[in-house]
Amino acid sequence: MNDDGLDLEDRYRRVLRLLPGYYRDRWEEDMVAALLDSRMTGDEDEDYYVLVYGRPGWPEVASVAALAIRLYLGGAGTPRRYFAWGQAVRRAVLAVLLVHATQGLADLTLLAWRRHLAAWFRPLPASLAAPAPSSAWPTVMNTVDYAWIVIFLALVLGHHRTARAIAALAVATELVVLLQAQFADILLRPLGTWSSWFLVSLAPVLAMAAFHQDAPPTARRPWLLALPGYYLLVPVPLMVIQVTGNQAWLPDSAGLGCLVVGLACLAHAPRALSRSRQAAGCGVWSLALTLLAAVAGAWRIVTLGNYVHDPHLMRVSLAELVILLAAVAVVAPDAARAQMPAPAPPPYPHPG
Amino acid sequence: MAVKPMTGQAFFVLSALADGPRHGYGIVGEVADLSHGRVKLKIGGLYGVLDRLTAERLIEPDREEAHDGRLRRYYRLTSGGRHALAEEAELRAATARVVRARLGLAGGEAAG
Figure 1 (cartoon, each protein chain N blue to C red):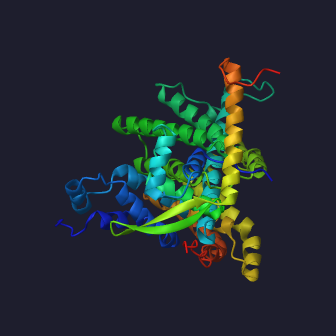
Figure 2 (figure 1 turned 90 degrees about the vertical axis):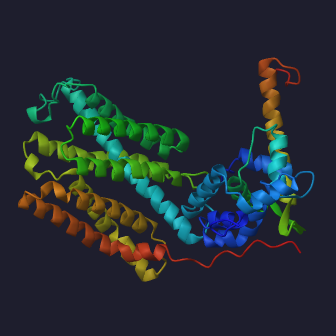
Figure 3 (figure 1 turned 90 degrees about the horizontal axis):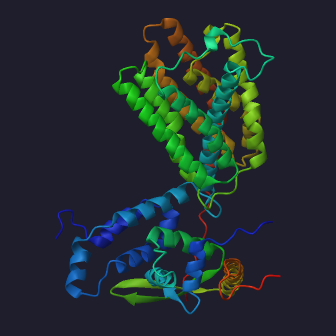
């Protein structure tokens, strides 16, 4: 017998535990039968050996894992709580990509300004002038910033594979640049930089798996309008603050994330609260904002270490965290209601 | 409202059931045969498609049979599934005729 006391069927059942319970109730027996059938050769001795000692193949495990992602981040036809999670993750991903894309637009604006493409502007202040690059890496990072615009637009317009492919390339490039800086010992705040890459670049790109074939199409118009809207509301005022020499008022990236998500929670609060009175519990936006708040909060906490020697900035950072927590507390009950399980759909009829 | 186009996997699974009911692994084998080995369904992918087609009432369970101590569930096309498959097959055949004509191959539609 095996060391773990399991045979192939037990191992397949263990893999199938990746799937949601309602789905296993419908399909587990059928899937186990098909998985075992796929391993049978017709040779009695060999089949016996496989049934006792065989292990699930990685391609089958990967296909079950991919199915699990599709079901937990549900699309049409999945139970309400999984659909709510799927929609919330999709909106949170789009929101993060929107921020990346507007950063790319801001970079393009500065590039145009530096190259005097807009003649009516006064010369770029020294604080925004780019130092002469000593290597190709800054150019590479700028290119990645511009790529986020394409990724965001591709995702909104429904070209999910294109968006995923370019996004994978973008995060891989960022990883190479960061590793190069790490090994060259020129990374100023390694913890903050790496956590930023993980939380704001890698995690959203992985979460793009929520844009699978069962996902409903993205509402194009509001997201396309959000691109110039957010650009005018956040990056432009920040550039104005920089241009006017008031950099001291600028929060760092993690702080900005806390403030923006906090404000978004407060803006959404009237809807979340009215929904709570109706007990409709369909607060997908509340759930998306809670996810974004979790990311922003984690980012802020991880980067607090940057300010251990600066009590003023430490107080400012903690204040940003408190604002975020207070704002997300308003929408969190609605987010919790969105996840409440509805009665599971009835199992498919058995042949009779 | 726009009708969602049928995916390649769904087309092959429905095609595998066109001449009679099949169980899960039987569908995998038939799809591989139909596609000349180009489409190799994994079990996770197969049951994603079967779940969707069942929810859309294009297929339904037919019967269960015991085999080596396990129950095999067979699936069959519904009348809606037969109709959807026929429509999709016609669409693909029409596309193939146009492509063949543009390539100047035999069996293509005459240019108008």
